[in-house]
Amino acid sequence: MAWTTEEFGESHEGIVGAVLEDGSEPKPAYFDIGSGAEMYRTSEWWAYDGRMRRPRAAAVRAACSCGWRGPGVPVPWDELDEDGLEELDVSGPRRDWSEHIRTVERRTVPLPEDLAQLLSALEDKLCALAEDAPAAALRAVAALDRLSRRAGREAACTIEEDGEQSWEALGRALGIDADRARYLVTRYLLLH
Image 1: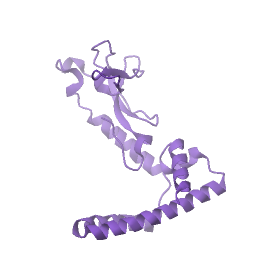
Image 2: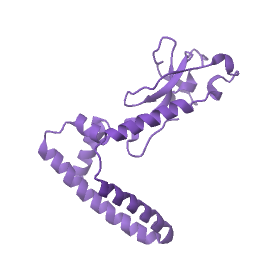
Image 3: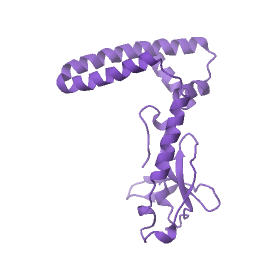
Image 4: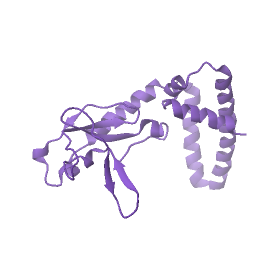
């Protein structure tokens, strides 16, 4: 099961991955899930138990779609029952990935403190309003949507006019990959 955050999405999707005896990562495992042409593909730890000609994991570790990898944790095969990896505790890799996400957050461009506080207060207010007066909450959300599209377009136009910002640098500032940064700017440029 993959881990994501709303802010970073697929740019920092995490899983518990397998590590082979030689320290490499195995190729993705494929599973036939029925009579159709679809094949399920995964690189998650649980698929590497040595069965059905798949390699056997020597260790597991957190892996992020950005390329980051956490430290490996040896798999204690002699302590596991015949179900293999199903009972393996993978809470350590999850904590490692969460720490990686906190590092990514620290590297993003900071919001001005007053704006961060305002956004937090606004979230609290809107969530309470959604329960007490849902129509008023929808009206407020629609107003915020209009405001965010205008501000997003203005920011995207400024970035485009500047022309000196690389997609990689913008992506780092936002905590996302370069392709996602380009998509975000393009999306706001196309809004009317």
